[in-house]
Image (cartoon, rainbow, N blue to C red):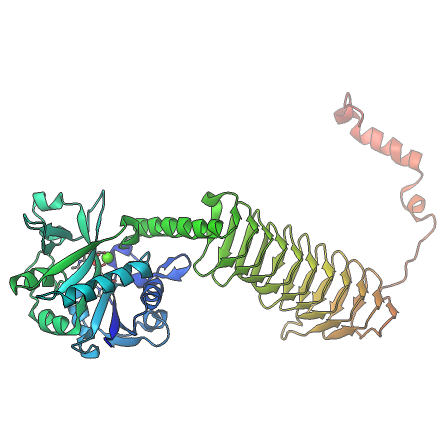
Length: 481
Ligand code: UD1
Ligand code: CA
């Protein structure tokens, strides 16, 4: 069996991005471009992947994913030089799929097609030196152009900087996706010279070299939008637009209603169940999964949110949390990381929940802060309740038993526990545990001081007379309310 080895070039600086971040770490669909490229290679079934990265670019090495062999390009001198760095990791008989880390829209099927075609051509008399993916673009500016002879055979790739005006008119471009043997790599790459306008060691020059050696080069066409190479921020935006449209189409094909694709953002790897409706202005970001029959949005911001079935989330944010079946979140709620909402729980207007477990059917309906708490089932949290979890130095937890009723404007000063079915009177500041079934009241008793107002301000008539006297000029002619 032949070994298929993916090689990803990811050591370039990406000057045209004007960024402190290495180019291949810029995200498309919420994932670093280079991670998407490696996903495509894995999806195509390669046996192993070798990544060429810049020394010290640990974050790039990490973005390649698990099990990738990392080699370093010490002093970047072009794509040919980068590819040469991978040669020691590749056996002569390996079939290499060589790709650039800035081609994030690449699909596994295209790579599989390329590999299959290359293997077929290899068995033909005379074999083949290199197969590559090309595309025809309405604006080919910046890409290497594919030069064909009169018979239509590929004979060379000419980079933008080296193009004659006639060559610059060619719209067939090099996508930077190649298939070749380890033997060809080891043979051709050391022979590259800097005889081009860029004074670089250009991988693309091996096409002309192979033709001179009497070998064949095959070109396999692909869709233009799949081979988009990202060198600048405008291309990055373009890639994100393509990615998004693609993802939304897949979701719609799977039975999801996307009310307005133009204002719906769904990251790579986010799954959405059938018959879920996504309303405009919604963001389903990395790590999110949404079950069936949900109503998401308008204005849902979900990041790392695991949402069950028949859940409604609108005008709200859910981060790194779990929301059980039949829950309602919003409008205007903020579910912060490490929260688990049990089935049928309700988090309403202006409520914030953090690092808490909320039992089934529990309601946190209005203006509350629930932090570091364990709430049982069917608990009612009144308006304006605050879980006072922070003493200025440390965070503490609060426990609330099943069916407890926490009145409006209660402070639960952690650490504290409220027992099952306990009642807490509104306005209480609870600093000691409340036994199950008890009523806790922790506020000063009300005092009403009879006649205080008249003693302080005089009679109502006195007060009216005073007001009339003061406001006489401005209030003249003012309509009655
Ligand atoms: C390259 C091709 C061009 C093709 C286009 C497709 C060459 C010479 N040109 O141009 O024909 O149309 O891609 O998108 O190959 N890299 C390194 N080390 C280096 C230089 C680059 O690892 O020394 C990596 C980069 O990180 C990048 C990839 O190689 O991921 C491609 O390099 P880039 O500079 O973007 O090439 P282009 O100018 O786009
Ligand atoms: Ca590029």
